Length: 220
Image 1 (cartoon, rainbow, N blue to C red):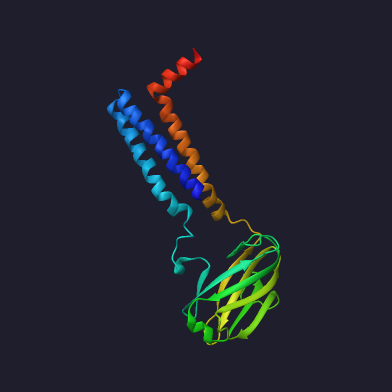
Image 2 (cartoon, rainbow, N blue to C red):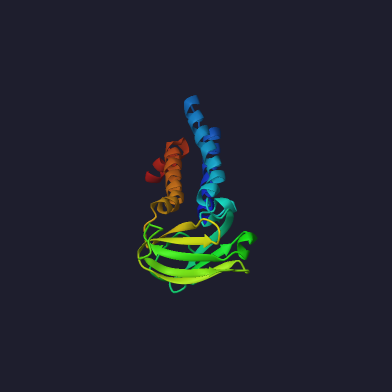
């Protein structure tokens, strides 16, 4: 994401140089000048907006994090790990591969660390199902604030259900080896933005008198 941001800044600088050159060296009609000025303004704003777009998850507050849920009015944070596939990767609700998966629930609020808490993982969307239970951790007190367990997950949808004693349960929907189209779209946003900027800048440059003169002289 940092590379994309640097590329946008570089393109904006190029656009600024092109714009200045066009203003001082080429007679421009008022309408064209207005269009170029608007384009220049958009290119300057994009580098400011882009970090907020591409890092939407990384810079959000704890309560807005998709890995965070409220359980009994208190916050918990969930992560999944598959070291056999990627030693350092952390996943939340989208788990990219099948197989043994380490599941970790962090009790963010200390109030939960004094309550027995159970965790159950079921396959499918129905939280009441008993037949498809793939992991069941009995209620225990966790003074260190961390619940750890392991489950073998096949491709499909799962519910990880967290139940503190005396409170209603809360759950995470886990997607194992599923295509997350929203995530694909977010990842494509940066490259598409750069491509569109290159097209727009190339078009503006191609209309300049300086470029036309260079093109004619290079072909002579």
